[in-house]
Image 1: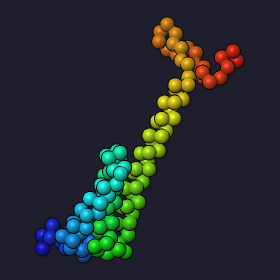
Image 2: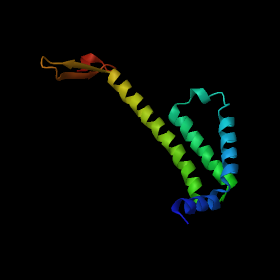
Image 3: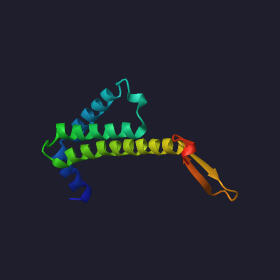
Image 4: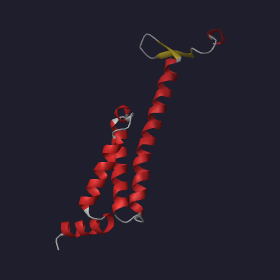
Length: 123
């Protein structure tokens, strides 16, 4: 048996017949795309949800106790959470810089840095 045949047989044992999995996966993804917010999602969010649906279809069509499928779902959701946290932190950093008055000396280096939200006379 060739390596690819072995791989396909192993996958079929875990995830069931590919034709049924494919139909279920496509149906789940199509249903998801009808949501009012689908077009508002960033591409990484859409892809994460599509991969989660793919994993759900594998669970529903194959071995529901195959832990890797469940772990993969958590992983794809975590990727979105990590990106949202990163974006939130970036917004906070930008906001902090907007609240700072940076004056440059003649050479272009920062000379005085004062938070604009504090009383300037206190400096």
